[in-house]
Each structure stands twice: as C-alpha cells, then as structure tokens.
Length: 88
Image (cartoon, rainbow, N blue to C red):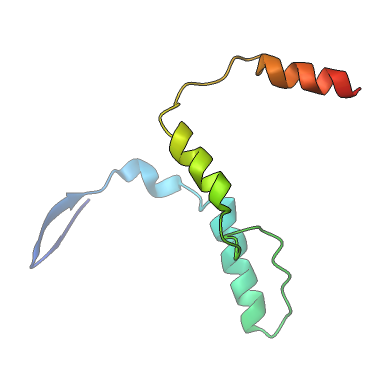
C-alpha cells in the first residue's frame, strides 16, 4: 500500500500491521474517555507525570551517573545486598 499527498513523497506501509491490535493502554484510555463522555465518573489510578518537582539531589545524582549504561550484576549490588541482609 502506498500513500501520497501532493506535498509529500510516497510512504510504504507494511501490510503485516493489518492484524495488529491497539495497545492495552491505548484501549483503556479510549474506553475511559468514552465513559467520561457519557457522564460516568472515572478514577484514573495510573501515576502518569508527577506534579511535583524532582528534588535537586536526585537531579544531581542523575547528572553524575547518566554515563553509567551497563546492567547491574544479576545478583545485585553487593553493598545493597549486605545492607538488606543486615536488617533481617
């Protein structure tokens, strides 16, 4: 399938996407919008974007560690494991 408009080049659409279902999140959002439009009260329990600012010490830690891209060891951080085991 090729889609064109007078101002844009042809776009090839892979026909394998025909059977794709919408994501569960999109489906839930669409359904909640329908119910809200019907006057139903909807309780949104998702976290979404926080209305609170990110604390400065968290921002600083993110800046300092942003370059660390490797996965942690499967067993976790040794110091953290030691601290957790000391609590119990």
